[in-house]
Image (cartoon, rainbow, N blue to C red; front, side):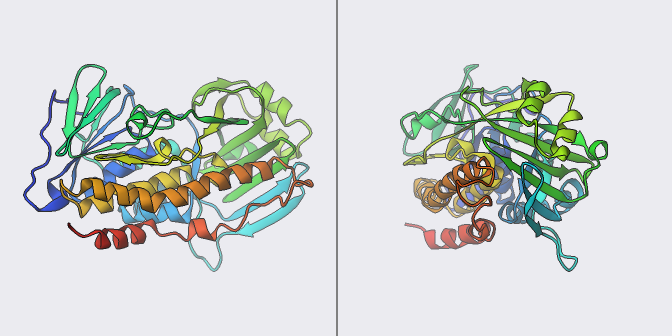
Length: 403
């Protein structure tokens, strides 16, 4: 992926703005890679540093909503999306016994579905394929950060350092750079653990394009398609007092999953019976941070706003972050970088804070099982899905101007 030099020069300050800036992105998750793609497409020189020695994703899926799909299409990835994703034709919400409480068609009159199931590994590959080979540097664990009026420097565990005009911390909920922006804040355990994995659709006879959620007291179960309906992603959410590790790849016991959903609809039981191995995932978020930026450093994705998965917006919000910060930086120069990053935070903070709360609320409703705790289905999602982060970012970038 290219060798990291001991030092690297920052962008020239010849007044031509973003084309001559250098940006360091720390973290090669969805948010980090999407940011690198957006910056590269904007003509900004970027390096992305990842602490893992090998970039790999476990078998798990995500849902891409209209707001996230809009960003990916803006980045020129429409064709790849059509080949790798699974358009969702209808969304079904059921009680634990299988009784339907909602069945919403998502495709009418031959139009394209605006909810797509996607394997995380496929999304990673799609983003990586849009970058030159020398952008990503693996096995670089960030340990420190410094900045002055002209540039910023990140330091790595092996003693290497890298200088840039801007540093974007996309290094997850346990971000090593967050402490340079705000006092450290511990992640908050949700009281829930998820069992997750994938199965061949044919093994369980899963209908093409079907997204289904079953709600029960203290637990809910979710299934949706991946890879052109060849796979399904399943997730079983279970309330627990044990604070499981926040990890995509911790092994779980299918027998525990089966016990948790005993007595559910026979379709859920049949799916769980087909599972040979599973992963467990402790669910954590964090209270909204008061600040996302400090000079030439900005937080992005889970480093800024980790959220529970119950609104299906974690990856989508990271994509929105990516296009917003890249669009603003394309209009900035060395002197105006701090102001551009501050504007990025001003745009993004209210929306992600609202989504953090919405995700918590949805989880409580789903685990209410449709009982007296309130309506079993989430609030209207128009405010989430209709948002056009690209248009908002371009409007704000035009208004940003120069001093």
